[in-house]
Length: 184
Length: 280
Ligand code: SF4
Image 1 (cartoon, rainbow over the protein chains, first blue to last red):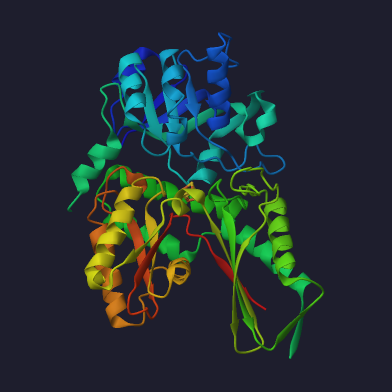
Image 2: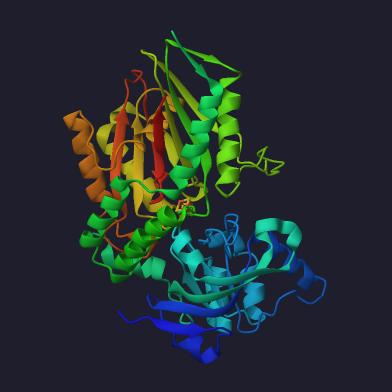
């Protein structure tokens, strides 16, 4: 099956063309972030301050890697459960965030924000962490070093394999995919 | 009487922590390959291929197959003729976990208190289950357990009248409710009988059985087959994105019950179904 290669920052045109079930190879700069980093970013926004990373057209990968072995770019780096970021994601989407990579279902509020502001949610394969780490070509901390593995890292990825789970039409592969195969 | 220095236990536990995280069992790999044939969803097939490739990379490069390198669950089967010297046995096990997780660059995922939640920094303490058995050998099993799948596990005290049907309903409910969160395809461990904590332990022990090896009791083996079939008709599929292969195996363990009770525990394990053992 042909896979689509896309490059960050994502344009509206690319985002709007993506449909659930599509397998995509993600390329370029992406940012890591888990609950702690999201909480800090939303606190900055509440105070009217600038964020430590650009959001326009960007992609955030929900990941807390294992420690890197000496000489390695990054440790094993599979997706973590996205639901923990649901409380914060709509704020970031409204400010131009175009993609999120994680595992597990999103809340109706996040799905609605993706529809309204044109963003997508991708699943990476949970537990395929050694394979995913190989697609990470560079990694550096850009904010909140005090959070250790939960700091915001800037990654450069090459052909990171992900699957479109929620698209701008408001569709959800977790729901539709299961319906297709239920009872078979 | 046989004497074993606990330092030996430390060294073995450290090694097993690393090995369990780097090397997926051949039985699980074989189950992936079979799943690849059975799966109809192209997305599902792609995911299974990624998992096979992931296991190869982890083994060859000695890196953890999953970044969540788990809670270190350690089973000790201690021969009653063994005498340990050189210190506290459980401290020795924890020292092994500390070493294994540090030397192996494994993630430290344990917080020291459920509310204060400070990371202990070395993935200790381990959860240790000890059994005294006849003989003079010691069997050590290390089974790192990820948070995603452990969180979706559940236990219920059924009424005896609910019987086998009640057990099946509960197991299916747990798997369905878990959806994509425990990283399917799953290994489903079921413990039936005993008391509350016994059922939970049986479910955990069920995960250690070689994948797909049926229970020796034909009735229990039939229940395992029927549960696997029903689970794989739920449509959840690899990673919960739809498909035929939701579980790779269902293992059931049973124990005598109180006349008033029918406890059932379901311990879900993700495809990173990790455990390694050694005999001293
Ligand atoms: S559920 Fe298992 S495979 Fe998934 S992230 Fe957790 S440990 Fe890894």
